[in-house]
Image 1 (cartoon, rainbow, N blue to C red):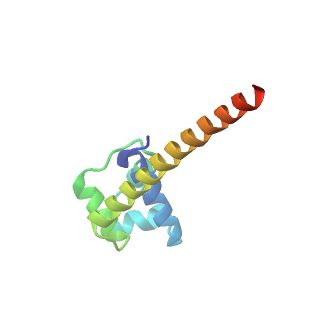
Image 2 (image 1 turned 90 degrees about the vertical axis):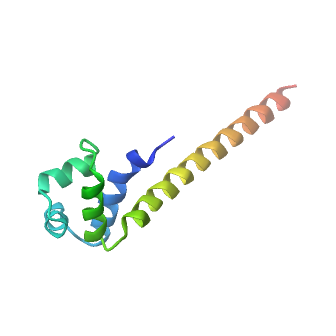
Length: 100
């Protein structure tokens, strides 16, 4: 299951791209180094709460809203994974029954 920690970098990148910004532009808006923004987006650097708040503000979001989006995304992925498991199990049962 994907965690908020895993989803945060992807969401930051997605929101940045939705605004048509480069990493440089986001870094400038958030008062961060461009290479650090790149590391955050790749998931190779974990931002502090202060940095996460700067990114959220640069993206016109409250930090709580940004984190909530990450959480909803993670929950949606977990639910989809669980549904796939149920459907895969049903498929296996159906095939087993048809062989009998």
